[in-house]
Length: 376
Image (tube, rainbow, N blue to C red):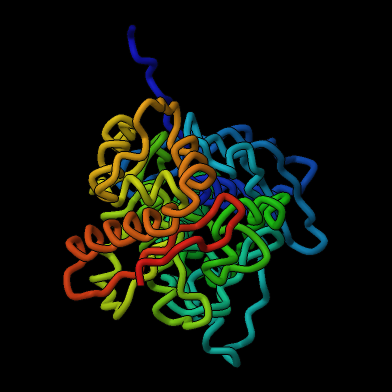
C-alpha cells in the first residue's frame, strides 16, 4: 500500500510575521492615501529563516486612521501535524507612536516595539529563551516579524520614491525605513489563545495567559519529534530554576530526556510512568512510542517470569499490557507488590545506564494517578 504524503504547514511565528507585514502595509497606505482609497490585502509574501519565500492568505484586515492603527490576521494551517493551534487566528496590529523628542532614549533607539496582545502568554518563570515579563514570542519569530515589517516599509518607501520621481522627474531624499520603524509598534494576539493554552504545556513552563509564538524554520513538519524534544529541553531549563516545579513531561522520549537531564547536571531523577511504559523501560526500550518500541506481550510475560523467578502466567494469553497489569493486581495478591517493585528496579537500572552518575528513582503510577510502588 502506498503511503500517503503528509502535508507540511506553518508555525505560529510565520503566521504572525505575515500578519504583521500586512498590517504594516495597510497602516502606511492608509496614512498616505486614506482608508477609503485602500485596496484589501488578500495575500502576503514573507521570507523564512532558510531564505525561501512563502505566501500566506490574509483572513481579515482593518484600519482606524483616527488612532493610526491597522490590523491583519492569518489562519494558521499546520498541515497534517496534530497541532492544537491549527486553525487559530493569529492577528497583528500595527500603529504609529509619537516620538518623545529623545526624552525616552529606549524609544528613540528601538527599531520596532513588539508587544504581546490578548491570547499570547507572558513568561513568568526563568529558564526560557525569553526573559521573565516578556510576551512568549520566541527569538526566531521575533526576528521573522522584524524582517517582514522591514520589508513592508521598504516596499512602501520604494513606491513613494517612484511616485515622487515620476512627478518631479528627479531623485528624491525621503525618510529611510529605519527612521520610520522607530515610530512603529506591533502587537501580536491570538483569538481564543487563553483557551488553546490549556491544551499545551505552557502553564508548566511558567507561560501564563495564552499560547507561545513559536517556530525555528517557519515550517511545521507533520508528526515531527522536534516539538516534543524542544519542550523537554525547555522544561529542563525551567525545572532547573524552579524547585517547586521540578517535573518534565517526557512523552515517549525516555533516552533523550535522561540525556538532557545529565546535560543539565541534575543530581537525582524521579522517573514516573504507568504500567505499559514502565514495563517497556524495564525491558530496556529507549523510545517507548509504539512506532519504535511496540511491546511484544509474549516477551513481556517471559521477562516478568524471569524477573520474578516464578511461573505465574502459564495458560494465560494477554492482548494488552493493561491486561497483564490487571491480572497481576487481581490474581497475584500475595506477590504483586514484589513484582511491581522488581519492574521498577529494572527500569531504574536501565535509566541509570543511560545517565550514569545520576541516581534514578522509578515510580510506578496507577491508572488512577496514585504511586503504586517505587524503586527506592
